[in-house]
Every structure is written in C-alpha cells, then in structure tokens.
Amino acid sequence: MQMVQSSSPSYPLMVSLDLSRKFLATMTEINIQAALESAAHVKRVLQASDKWQLMPSDDPLKLTLQVDKGVSAKETAALFEQENIYPELTTHNQILFIHGIAPFPHIESLEKTVETVNEQLKKRDNHDIIEMKDLFLKSTQELSLSYQKMDQLQQVFVPFHEAIGYIAAEPIIPYPPGIPLILKGEKVTEAHLEMVTQLKQQQVSIQKWEKHGMMIFQQ
Image (cartoon, rainbow, N blue to C red):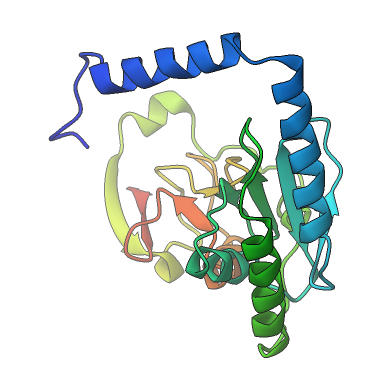
C-alpha cells in the first residue's frame, strides 16, 4: 500500500460516490419498500439452518449470523464464498452480510447456497470455540514501565513463546473487536500465549502479529 497509495483523491471512487448519492436521492417510497421486503425475504432464507441464528438488528439491511458453539464462523463464511456469497465482515463467531438498497434478485440461488453450507457443516467435526467475551473478563495489568522509560529502551523481536515474562514493546490486537489483548508496556503472561494460540487456531486476525512473534523491550 505504501508503494501505491496517494494523498490525491481517487476520481473513479469519487464518481462512484456521486452516482451512489444520486441513486439514494432519487429513491422513491416504492423503491425503499421493495428493498425492505427483499431484506425480510433474505432473512427468512438465512434462518433455515440449525448451525446458526440470525441476530436481531435495528438496521434492516444488516444480516448477522451467529454460529453455534463448536462451529467456526471463518469456515462457514468460506463455504458461502465458494457459492459466490461474500460477507462484509467475519469474526470468530459471527458473519455479517449487507443487503443492498435494491431487491436481491437471486433468492433461489441463495436458498441452494444455505442448503449446501448446512450440509457441508454437518460433515465437519465441531470444535471448541473460545468466547470472545472471555478475553476481557480479567482487569488489565498495570504497565510495568512508564512511557518515558519505554522510549529509552531497545526493542527486540522474539518468538511469542519466548516472550513470556518480558514486557511487550507493541500491542497485540485481535480484530474484531479491535481491543488490545496485550498493551505496550504490559508483561506477557502464559495466559496471553494460550489466548493468542487459541485465537490463531480459529483464524482470528491479530494485528501486530508477525511470524508468530512480537517485539519486546530489551532490559
């Protein structure tokens, strides 16, 4: 991205935004009602599964599936993608789909996709899935170093299993939810290692995680 990104605006992107603005500005009540009815129909199709539940939402165009315990949301999303149904976002236990502001024209195809995904999941073994809420049940440790002291220390990269007992020189952040599991200046514990290992096994994206290691302060 550093090679190709620019501070200059993307004119194709700006044009697409203007077209989207025009589309919204010219929508009629009939168009809006048709989109809402379509979203409701899609919800009924998605509910035809015993492997997930459709979560309630104040936004009728956001369709969130919460997979059952033992079912991997990442694997489930991959099965949808194999059928050309692409989610907006996937966490360790939820999949977010966005319904467009026009009626969805492929209901029969979606019904077949849901049936196919269900059959594929039934053939797979269930796995223990860690609850994301368990990440933050304990209070965060006090920082072992002041920020002034951190600025004076050298940093070194070590494999994660060797970082236990050392002080993190960077935050380790599972995303979503985007909340640091380990703070910069916090001592790395065995519990951290266990949690990160389980998250990686569930294919949760972790920021500041490179080659199964991390930066620590050299003291």
